[in-house]
Image (cartoon, rainbow, N blue to C red; front, side, top):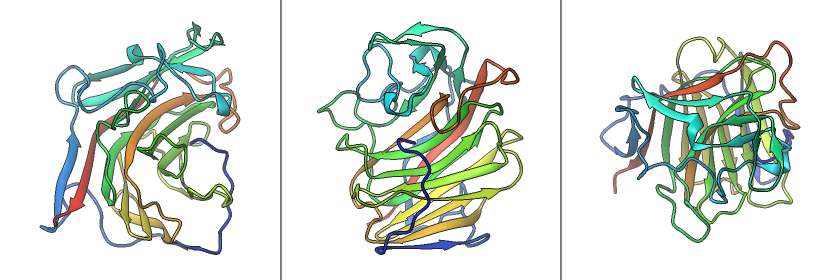
Length: 270
């Protein structure tokens, strides 16, 4: 999410591309795994003890200016109803606290620190993450579920899923190693549109091993000493525009919504 797509393999990383593997999904875990975090988004409001609605640099909203994104994230664009979390992008100009004017407002959530120097609301080192999602279609839309270090550094970064609205049949995955001398690595696969029905996306994170899953099948893995080994937190957002997805066009329909049915994190029992 914080950097453009570059596909490269460093010497310390082994990448294995797969199309099927061990089943992975909600309720399929053995007794050695325990739920550490779960939100089914029941009720009519976001759980403020679990989630923030901006990054830790929140100042009346936020954005990621290094990506030249066109949205300003606001709490009003985050809603919970009917057992779903909705992150909604609208074409509505807003002036950010940075003095810039943004043509779109959108929603995001994170379990990270609510402010610099504060602890994350929820973080973990190693485990299994799963989210059940439906991403919007439309040029310029960029839906993502990802992870960042609780130290508030921008690296390492694990992108569990990215979907560009111009082609929601493509699922995109990345690892941005902590060592900034190492290029990010990424992988893409195609399947049924992420805008059609619900899809389970998951990550299994163990020492020197990352395994990505979509709808129960392993689709990619990375092995090596660049796999993160520090506490990380969750982020989900719907960005608009920027260098990566490009701007919306006349066919992009607003409001556009990234829907999340649930988020669960398991860890091995000790």
